[in-house]
Length: 137
View 1 (cartoon, helix red, strand yellow):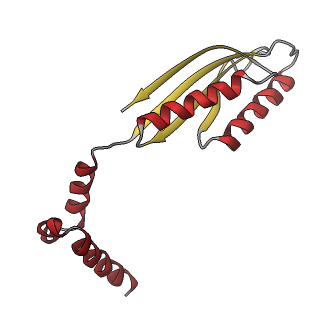
View 2 (view 1 turned 135 degrees about the vertical axis):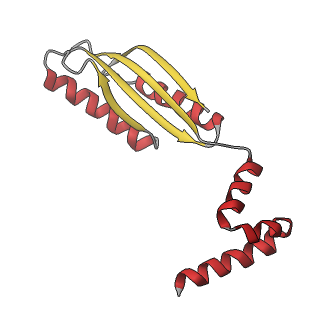
């Protein structure tokens, strides 16, 4: 009962807002949604960043994990990105972090990844050695 009311409301709303799309009505909702995606002209933009860090005053894996956890928690709380340690996991003074961001706006993805880099760069616990940003359309 609820589902049919939702579909009926969606059909009537679509007809009132987009009368020129009424011709897609008889083809089904999926075809109309594909048409709407083409009109928008945007897809999913995936941004990844690989960050190499040096943790100079560290003498154990336990200390390294504390520093990395602190950086990851700060990045997660400030930005809506995925972050994980992806390399040099058994070395005491080195680490590689991977950051991923998904949006439909290229400028937003680039801006967020650069802000993440700035946050990590200003961290006093670790030194940024190298980074690589890759954006996939």
